[in-house]
Image (cartoon, rainbow, N blue to C red; front, side, top):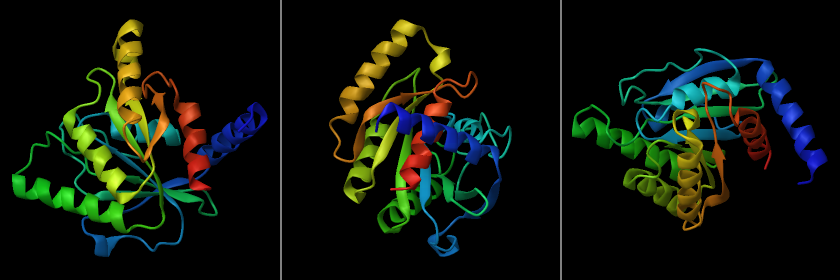
Length: 214
């Protein structure tokens, strides 16, 4: 993609997300999924990685996705309609890792996510969010391997990049790139973002729109 195409895609993404974006439904089980009639882009990440904040930043709203400092708040697949007429859906997936919930409930979340990834033809791309303050953790690698096995392409996105020094961010970015390149379904590019500062959001919006059109 040349510079002109990137500029055009970025502008289309800006206009799209400035338009209608609405919460559709929550799905605690696969039988509650919406009709498979449009492309889907999913967001995944460890509990408290800033997933809801990033989703809010992407769509340019302050509270379309609820945020919480309590890890494990998102326990279902949450669907958001983008565009009018409907262009695609964003899917907020349950956080993984250190969720404050009984093991049985955590296993239910894991099974829901795994079955969704493996069986949803409309899923075009997943964003795997990694906290820039901590880098890639074993649970992130586990999620990446799950996506590899499901043959679902994904982008690794560093969140909260404003919370660490530039030198530390550079090191985390480099290490994350090394890890991403070990995985068959990962993009060989790592996005750096800050929901609070708006860093990298414009680029990520364009990437999401582009992925929905593949």
